Length: 192
Image 1 (cartoon, rainbow, N blue to C red):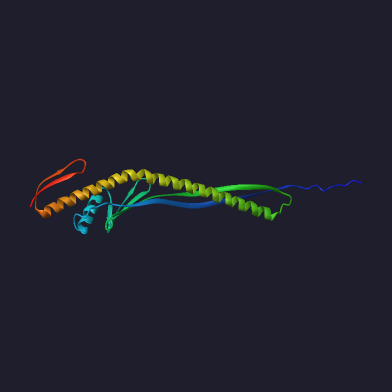
Image 2 (image 1 turned 90 degrees about the horizontal axis):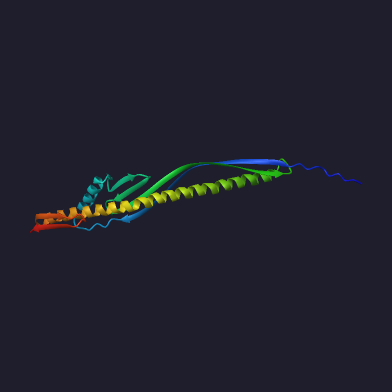
């Protein structure tokens, strides 16, 4: 007796998934300015604001801000003497993928759902990789800006200190001479 087995057919199913997402990232650091209390707080704040404005900062009430290249924003709180530096970046992701499988039944819904889930997971992984790459770029921009900015803010503190010393010397008596060295040292001669 001969047995004939029915021929089984293989069907190919394909699913396509896409992901669109706007990805914003930021990174930042905070620090303090080391201002000596040479004059009253309000006068020190005004000297600080004037020096920052001379360096391109915009004063808005009790803070001064400046935007720099590469999406870096610097904000100085004039009351507390704190500095917040934030680097920002964003990207629009448009990702897509396709998954295929061979099944015995053309209407294999379970397999189709599994393919869709696998495709969505792959897109989410790819999106996380893209977001992490953007985060590294933003952090790199922040780190690249920090060294120059620290030097600039140290210069601001030195100028504010020198101006405060001059004002304080004038309060104490008649200023006879002021000698400022390139390294920031100031010598003031006062007749009391």
